[in-house]
Amino acid sequence: MAPLPSSSSILPLLLLCLLITPSLAFPKRKPAQKPQQRFLQCLSDHSQKTTAIPFSRSFFTPDSSNFSTVLNSTAQNLRYLLPSVLKPVFIFTPLQVSHIQAAVICSKKLNINLRIRSGGHDYEGLSYASKTESSFLILDLSKLRAVYDIDITSKTAWAQAGATIGEAYYRIAEKSRTHGFPAGLCGAYGGMMRKYGLGADNVVDALIVDASGKLLDRKAMGEDVFWAIRGGAGGSFGVIVAWKLKWQQVADKLDDDLFIRVIITTGPIGNTTSLFKNYFKAKSDFVRDPIPETGLEGIWKRFLQEDSPLTIWNPLGGQMARISESAIPFPHRKGNAFMIQWVTNWQDGASSSARHMDWVRKLHNYMTPYVSKKPRTSYVNYRDLDLGMNKGGNTSFIEASAWGTSYFKGNFNKLVQIKTKFDPENFFRHEQSIPPLPLSMRKRKGRGGVGFH
Image (tube, rainbow, N blue to C red; front, side, top):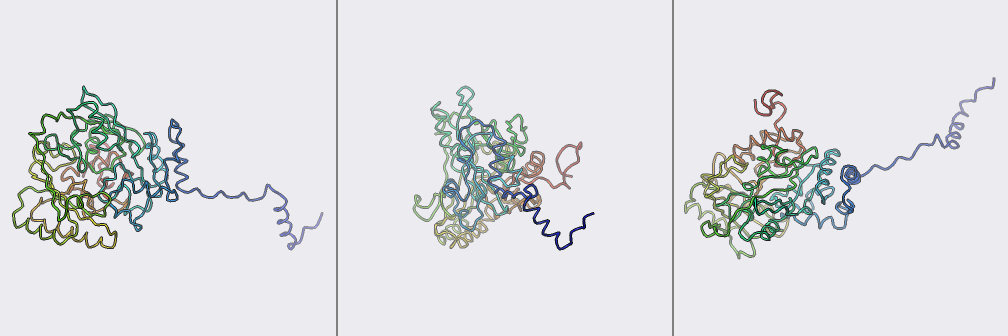
């Protein structure tokens, strides 16, 4: 029997074996893919291959030369474009509906918060910025802007989520000179709302992608969800792909249905009223009783203390008062005389933000005796994070009730119940999205569905 090698010779022998035996060499580890690369691969795996345009043409990372251009393209409030504000890990601009479905599936799979942007109108920038998420992506719907299936007989048309109001008006006008859609100005209210109500009052169908990536129309989503998405905090329930709009015949009725709104500022109207591409902070109120002269004098006094103040007073009444508070999530109907928007805007960036925001907050506080009470109500499309915020994925129903009742009054509870059923894992979320009920407050199966104990 041959003698065993000494311990001193074992180590050189092992090293020699490793050097001359390729099969024992350790394989090189592939570098970990970046979130952007994993997302692109996931998109490719889950999208229908019906377009010759590669995803890379619709995908923008901070390293892309045009990333800032795309990010800034429809962002209205420059406060949320400052360097100190967290930016998206990437922006995806889908070209077809299947891309939206794949984006939802992939963002959920990779655990990346999804921010949905169409017009970028959100006053607090929640469609393109975040104060609560460590990372997020923007699903920018600006490429999906078709207005189609315009039907003279049924007086309806479909408009994709990226279409501007001007594009919708134009396509309807191509078919009819006596029809229009009651939207415009800010959010879903406009010059025809006293005759026909809000834009959301005149929507008859919709397409939405839910948290599992399914495309649903009104019948498939159910009447509760269809009710909720017409003004119930955008970005809470899914990705709205398109709306089916109901036209109204308006040309021969405008003289009888005059809409007058008041714009008050301290300088030339043309230089101060535009909120687009400004640093600004806004708040809102609903007024039920006339503001006394002493109250108005206090407003004028405070306006003279600010550089570029602005307030817009929009009349309600008419059809707005005849529609039930619970018809859609927007509850500010009968008994409200007008809605007020309070705005301050500036151009010198972060250096003076605190001073201007302090001014509008103090003005809002001053107006407390003259506006709605219990609750003091606000307009959701003039979003105001001063009312409260969700804390990322840890959304508190109790805390959300503070701002929820301000925007939606009693409709908030119904929105929460629908959210709990339709998106129980709270995939679609942002700082003021509708929260689901906590597990402790959900009814057990077989006892009437979702609700309160």
